[in-house]
Image (cartoon, rainbow, N blue to C red; front, side, top):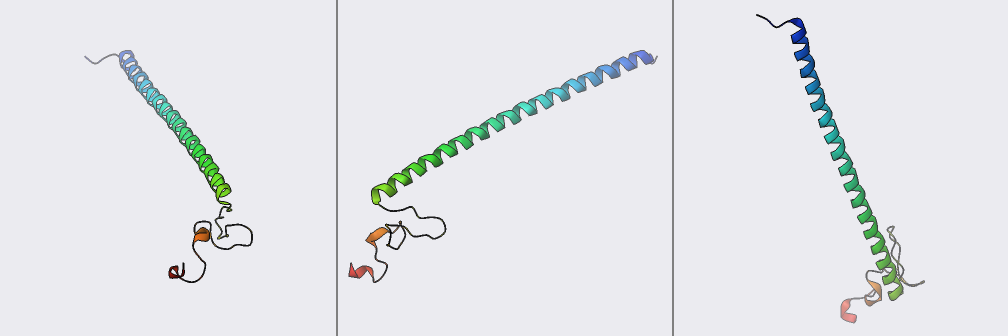
Length: 102
């Protein structure tokens, strides 16, 4: 004997409710994971920013102690005003001649 229409409707409703709850739990888990990922990225960005500030302080300190200006990214020159050459090479390496002349 086949189940009554009311029984089938109730079974179908129970199945849909179960599927809905599973779907809802999946969505919440995904949102929780997304929130955690966002928080992780914010922490990474904060650490990178702190690292950049630390490097900026170190470079500023180095340029003060060596009396050189920081070289800009556009091919600028470093050193005291009127000098030429990059701050990387400094005054230890001449801009002309050879190392044998040192």
